[in-house]
Amino acid sequence: MSDTATLLINCPDRRGLVAAVSGFLYRIGANILHADQHQDNEQGLFFMRLEWSLEGVSLEGQAFREAFEREVAAPNSMRWRLEESKRMARVALFVSRYDHCLLDLLHRQRSGELRCEIPLVISNHETGREIARFYGAAFELVPVEKGAKSAAEARHWELLASHGIDLIVLARYMQVLSPEFVRRYPQRIINVHHSFLPAFVGARPYHAAFERGVKLIGATSHYVTEELDEGPIIEQDVVRVSHRDQLADLIQKGRDLERTVLSRAVRWHLEHRILLYGKKTVVFD
Image (cartoon, rainbow, N blue to C red; front, side, top):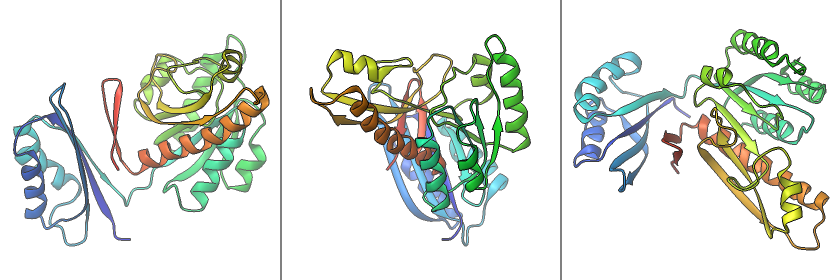
């Protein structure tokens, strides 16, 4: 595949936006490979994603940014960002005792389904050491002792900086990140919650669902914010359960959902398919 560039746009909705953007790309010789758009009529907002081949274009990188800002973005009050496929994201996986999401993400990365590098696995338990070694990732054990979370997070920051990490994925990491940690990585931490949010928040949602006698259970992947389990939702899925299912059955079915939901969210982030606004996301096809 040739190198590509992706443009993500968010701005007040008005006539002529598609023409302005596509016209600019035409003038620099870009061959558009994919285009998608969305309007939020209630808020009067416009969202757009375009991807094009970099072969034969007359503007790339900083030169593109300067020209696009001047000619298109500024006149239309656009918030936008440009991503290029030649730069592969570096991802760190955080995990606690349960390794099913860790295994799934490492396997998908090795098979080429997730286009990224995963150089680092961090855990507060020994779980995952041999798995990380098998897949060629460094494993770092960082215990989180009671009353010493700040020391653990300081070590996390050292490791993330030394490995040049772009994205953090909480692959069933059962520790609450501090507000300071979250502020350091805005829109760059993805979590999977073993429940269909906003129902059954907290640490034991399968137990709560079992006690409530629900007929559907789910999993949710979302960006992490300072409010626990309140970040913008990227992906969700559900599976039907019945009175015949015991707690262990719910947990097993839920883990299958967790793997699928988290991998989709990570893949869409890596492919630059997500735009955030307020507490919502737009996920382009």
